[in-house]
Amino acid sequence: MSLANGRQYLAIPGPSVMPDRVLQAMHQPAPNIYTGPLVEMTEGIVADLKAVAGTAHDAAIYIANGHGAWEAALANTMSRGDRILILGTGRFCLGWGEIARGLGVETEVLDFGYRAGVDLDRVAEVLRADTDHTLRAVLAVQVDTASSVKNDIAGLRRVLDETGHPAMLFSDNIACLGVDEFHMDAWGVDLMVTGSQKGLMVPPGLGFVFFGPKAAAARESANCVTPYWDWRPRANPAMFYQYFGGTAPTHHLFGLRESLDMIKEEGMQAIWHRHATLARAIWAAFDSWGEGCAIALNIADPAARAHAVTTVRMGGDDGTRLRAWLEQVAGITLGIPLGAPEPDMPGIFRIGHMGHVNAHMVMGVLGSIQAGMYALGIAHGPGGLEAAARVIAEG
Ligand SMILES: *Cc1c(COP(=O)(O)O)cnc(C)c1O
Image 1 (spheres, helix red, strand yellow):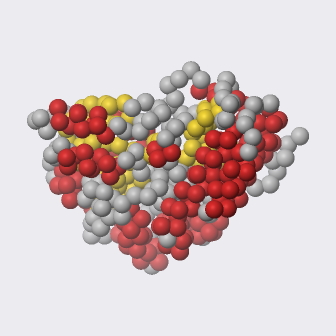
Image 2 (cartoon, rainbow, N blue to C red):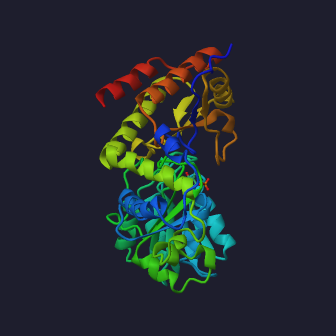
Image 3 (cartoon, rainbow, N blue to C red):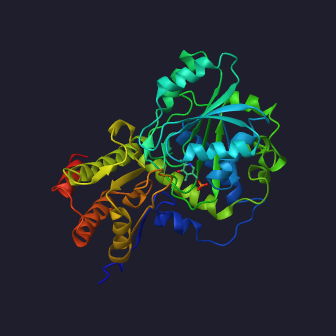
């Protein structure tokens, strides 16, 4: 018997839950794109996005998903035959590398696998071995949405500085901007990409590229770029339409204005803290359930776990069975396994907890998982919900 009728919860790691305020802000007739409120509010949107990114430098907006932002970042900074270093920790940086190769950029890939973050010592070795400084950029994801690992982006800047390597540092924050702590300028990141549909709580369709002076200088010699993807008019528009290379994404901008207002009202510190606490509640539940049973968090080291998404491993096909039960009976959709190289993939699922997520939503997911494990006869240790509740009680 289904108990799913009620508000559905899409708990996949993007697109994330859209706040009612964002949906309502988007519910209006088409605006004038030449003058009036839409035109007036765009400058403020760019300024507020930069504040969320922690940068005083440039931003370009694309009507695109994250893949479009990936390509824009590379097209504006690279020339065919350039070499870059790709740091694989799951799926997503490897995907960015595939785009690079498609553009004619050569990639050196350091793959740390599906269960660990970037090993800074190994990156240092590669940079030291590159005595001619042929590597033009180091590409990493802060949060890999497949493995749910969080990489040490500030640490990568330290390694570049310590090895005296001039490569630029590019960070993919598509999963985690507005979720996990990040400071683009303070951490010495030369370029960061993100999208609208995860921590920013807006439908998919906007890609953002933030770039500092070194990346801006690279644009001057890059030969991969084509007119539509050129970030210069977008970052420094003489006319309103140049922000978007054509018609503005009108309703996405209404939604984004509202979500940026919500972010301002809560404050970045409070937002990071909320996500950290909710993530720790999820980890506490699975740590208890996993005692003596075939249930484990994919990333063992808590310091290397994302606050935006959690990848869980169960035995056999228990992950797949549990996802189906939660969808049919509880009204919750969890994320499918993605990019796991191992044969036990049907045991893996992911929980998205990025953006518009609060304590009752997380406790609802965990309580429903507990019910699903009872219903399906999945063996689990005791005390998972109590452990999660205690984390939330302590805040
Ligand atoms: C979602 C995601 C992407 C891809 O974004 P799309 O909008 O699906 O193109 C890239 N990188 C990371 C880390 C992501 O989470």
